[in-house]
Image (cartoon, rainbow, N blue to C red; front, side, top):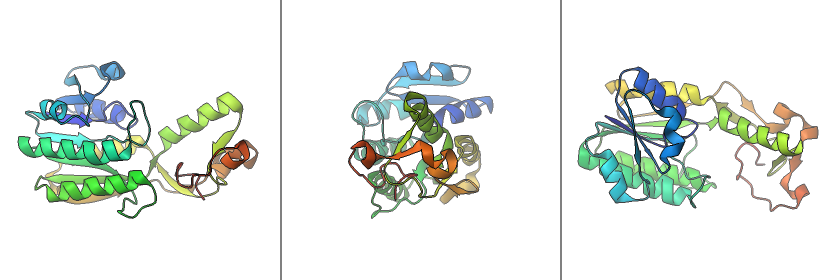
Length: 239
């Protein structure tokens, strides 16, 4: 049994079906089972639980042979944060996996570091350190920004106002990767024991910026809209 935490997100919705189609049993841990309806099918079980709740995590992980953490607290409902989800939530998942004797795959971010200016990157780094020290068979997958996620955000902005609001000038080049490619790499790591103890980084072929993607006439700085300047809040748009 493979437990996937974060199975209803951009990455999880591509990963869970891939695992199930390969004949693997998957248990999706989600706070809102209604969000996992599209994942229903043979070999997929959905359980309700919050990674911030150790007891709920322990129940979800019981009997698992592998845990995949694709969670993030960068944004979302329920007052999530990198500290409560990416750091504390992953600590709960790692602890439960250790008690079950399960292998662990952690989805982290490219550039994760203890002194990174963005809290998400610091929390992911802390989770990586906890996993390495856990004694579990582990694999860490560091990915750059998901193109599907940011394309959806930009599309909503364009549809609602015809403009894209960014923090900064929108000319900072950032590497994007397809979540489908990341899902394929994780699926390989599930079945390849040779990838235990490995840190794998995956990104796209180019570094792009919002101005280049959408045109300068469609990009508006947050300061011009009267919003606080917060460098790094939107990774692809920060100066």
